[in-house]
Image (cartoon, rainbow, N blue to C red; front, side, top):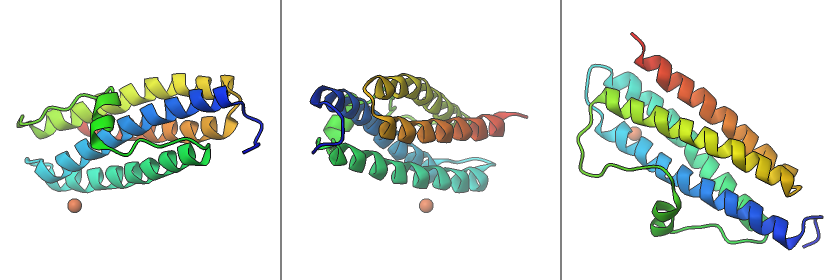
Amino acid sequence: MNIGLKEENIKNVSGALNNYLADLYVLVTKTKNYHWNMKGQHFYTYHKMLQEHYEALDEAVDEVAERIVMLGETAIGTLKEFSKKSVLKETPGEELSEKKMIQNLVKDHEQMIKGLRESIVLCQENKDEGSADLLVGQLKFHEKTAWMLRSSLEK
Ligand SMILES: [Fe+2]
């Protein structure tokens, strides 16, 4: 492959992309979990909204994984690695109120936004504008999604 990136650049970028992929995978799982198990007076609204979110997250999973492979590297593809690499916390076995679920999702999207800001700079420092562009798109998606979730909590 000869696309003007050094091996070292590709290693750095694909490392950041794999970390983001792990976070995406955990978040898509958590969003589906809440979509299924949420109870409360806003069930239908949240159920529908969370479906939109996990569908977008699922698409992003595929896009990020395929970009890693396009760069000649291996995309993580096991639940063990996703869960080990992700910075997002899961709470198995806990029964959560609908409000707590939405608050958790806001926190997760916000955490991913902060991580993405750093990864975007890393991609640019490694001269990979294509990956930076992909992550900028994702940054905007998480910002918008965090806003929607946050706004739905206001009285
Ligand atoms: Fe569903």
